[in-house]
Length: 279
Ligand SMILES: NC(=O)c1ccc[n+]([C@@H]2O[C@H](COP(=O)([O-])OP(=O)(O)OC[C@H]3O[C@@H](n4cnc5c(N)ncnc54)[C@H](OP(=O)(O)O)[C@@H]3O)[C@@H](O)[C@H]2O)c1
Image 1 (cartoon, rainbow, N blue to C red):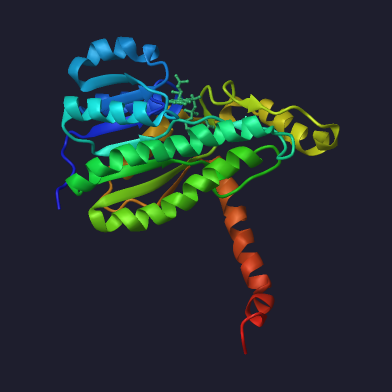
Image 2 (cartoon, rainbow, N blue to C red):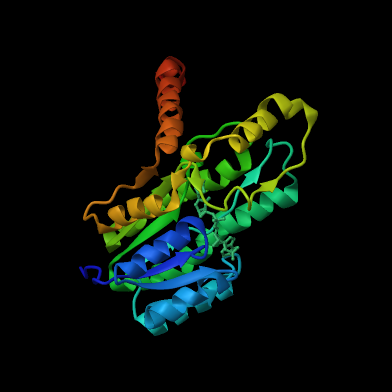
């Protein structure tokens, strides 16, 4: 089985801002090469000049399957291989499940789920041919937990988690690793880029309260994007990376009670679960 080369070649979506930008910077500082995707890559132009041949800017909308395929072809033409695929591009939709319009719900799935699938279909043939590679799937604390206001965002991240559970088992035997990246609240333009659904009064005590509380959170409650990127790089360096990586105390604090509650439901209702089987 071919091992990943050192330096590595990364393909990073959402590379111009927040976590993706930090990942791009750190990969370059580490001597790696990066194919950087975002709809508007102009924010990385200075960096591209500084890193010349090591950074390839590929203005690409992940919702556009053909554009993603072309971007992957360009990355291959420049670097010859892809070692790490960071499926990081995404945005949030905030509002009660009932408040999100059909258009808003479909739009967030288009980027956060169908965009991920576009990138997988374009890159997995490369990774399979290499019999090596690591796919980093952009999930969240909301990939396995949710609270009022994040239902649609969580739905997209749960979708990514579900497909990744199967994907990991499918591509593992082909030498490809998969890790779901689950950051908690992180200081990036994510909140500024949030789509917000129109409000119904009945959700003032739940959804609006949560929105207000998030808006009032101190800066110290948010993880640093550079440190999140550092955590992601740890997992890429590991010979035995986990399927899921929670990043930041707020991620662990959200995930643990949600996971325990699932087991409590399973165990607490096992007598009903088992009673439906044929005697
Ligand atoms: N920040 C947090 O608290 C947090 C917590 C958990 C998980 N996450 C996840 O981490 C990932 C990165 O988020 P972030 O916080 O770094 O957000 P961000 O600063 O808003 O960055 C989002 C990136 O995605 C790109 N993007 C958005 N739509 C795109 C599209 N259709 N095609 C291509 N690129 C697109 C943006 O560039 P363009 O607009 O130019 O395309 C930008 O580079 C997301 O998947 C997010 O859900 C974030």
